[in-house]
Image (cartoon, rainbow, N blue to C red; front, top):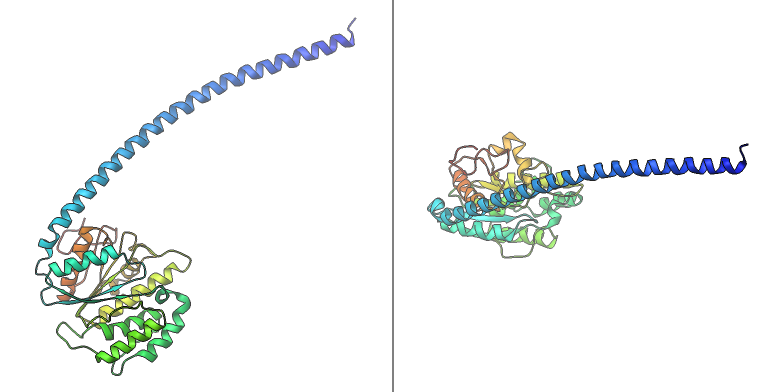
Amino acid sequence: MLTLRYHLVSLVAVFLALALGVALGSTSVSQRLLSVVAGDRNNLTAQVDQLTAQRGNWEAGQRAANGFAASVAPVVVKDQLVQRKVVLVLSPDADPADRDAVKTLIANAGGTVTGELDLADPIVDPARADQIRDLTARLLPAGAQLPSATDAGGLVGGLLGSVLLVRGQNGQAQVAPEQAAAALAGLTSAGFVRPGPRPAPAQLAVILTGAAQSGADSPNRAATLARLATELDHSGGGAVLAGRSGAADSTGAVGVVRADTTTSAALSTVDDVQSAMGRVATVLALREQADGRAGRYGDAATAQAAIPGSSAG
């Protein structure tokens, strides 16, 4: 006769058997899974090591190429800017190393840097656009004209062009020195330009910027700087907008210029000014501007060549 004790023992035995089977099965599955994972891990580790080595070789090659370009740069640009005067305009994110290197190469090319103008961050701040519009109208020197456009970048670019640049390659200053000084003092006191010596009038301009703009208002900031550079180009004998890698993106000033074929046909752009090759391109692009031509240079997809005169890559 089956007793309650018998049923309990039987049920316990069944559960123990099931538990043992599950444990044995799961152990087998786990071992197989661990074996697969270990194999994948080893493969991925090997791939990472290989890619790391390739990147190291690539970086070494880039350093060697950049070093070579830096060593021959003075020879490449020699006499390209003889009797040319150039003003440097630095965006809020411009790198001082780029400024110093470009200044040196302009001197190597026989040109003269008449001074630098440091733009402060509020000048590209969309929230300050109305203030810029009002201020440029009030600071405009007698006899100077602002562009017909109503955007802040174009207006302040037109104002700066009238006080920083001469008309044409061999023209006279567009405004009297005291008027230029008053305009720059007004922009400085309003926080749009950093304090510093007033540059003497120049024929050509280099606008140095960083990479792509960041933040929610980055498209507007990039567009403001692009319009400012465009008006500087219109105001004098030519201009070059040179930025670091990323500047040719949609939120970079170089990218904004290149997206407009009319603008990029007049204003030269460089997208790798952090490199020796990009700095050479900047100086050669200045010569190109002086000769009435323009181009897009660097290593971004939108560049036509690495430097003026080279084949597109």
